[in-house]
Amino acid sequence: MANQTIFLFLCSAILGLLSCSAQSPTMMLSTSPQQIQVLNHSQREIPESLQLFPIRQNGQEGYINSTGLIIIEPKFDEVSGFSEGLALVRIGDKWGYIDKSGQIVIKPNFDSAYSFFEGLAAVKIDGKMGYINQTGKLVIPPQFDLTYRFSEGMAAVRIEIDKWGYIDRNGKIVIKPGFGDSGDFHQGLALVRRDEGTMFINKTGQIIIKPSDGFLRKFSEGLAAIRVGNKVGYIDTTGRMVIAPQFNEGYDFSEGRALVLTDVIGINWKAPLTTNTKYGYIDKTGQMAIKPQFEGAVVFSEGLAAVKIADKWGYINKTGQIVIKPQFDLPSAFFGGLAIVYIGDEWGYIDMTGKYVWNPTK
Image (tube, rainbow, N blue to C red):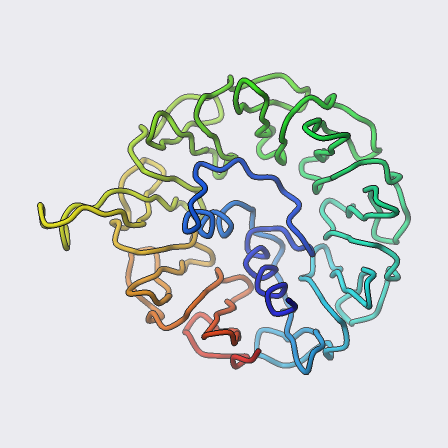
């Protein structure tokens, strides 16, 4: 369980959710296992630059730096990554926060807790969610069934089942609960769901991009994937289709590239031998920047992306050149110059040359 927690954190760290569980809802284009795996790697924003990385040793968890030197001795039952200078730690069955010296700055008093975003963190007390500030002071009393992180000054909260709305930093409801699901605000827009479909609203709750029968994704780098019929394209923040629907799946843009899944005809593009689907990458004009050829793939981060070839994972650069040969059973994206990789049930950290800075262990 603990090894899995560390890996899930590291996968999500690049994606911007540094917490003991996911706090950002997702409206998916697809639900197949492989596609969910890719989506989980791509759906969130990159967090602050991380200097410390979680490790597990002798049943306890602590942190190393980017060279593999232990900075905070493993002494916690469970840890998360640092966000805004603080990290979640679990001692027994309660969660608290430490600083980068390893000192506890907010005592472990919470049944569950989440990472800090915009100076506030969601915590659970007696079955209800509220928010604390970085001194540990409860600034928004526990009153919600579920809460999500603050983004652009607002956070989605659930009052009851299928009743999501938004609060401001004072805890005041600024968009009345009425959505079946709600996402973070990005570029002034949030993706929400109602019975008639998914749509984007602005910070007043006004519908900016009208309900769609197809599924939408959040905006990233000014574009959002949308399914029309059985194909996926991309719209801009006005709702204009800028990349025509043509892909089996489409994911968020990161570093000017978006991961897409499309049909590939033939072997090495020589028709008409076979037809299957492969992952590739497009640029923001919709042109194929790296042709579909991979069994699985992850979004670009720090100039590299993990790809799956012959059932093993390696890394490519933005030209599609393999820079770390496929050899891993499961990868994460790079953040802070390191990526976590699995060999069987053992995991470690590699640098951007593929060299281990923390050798694989259970």
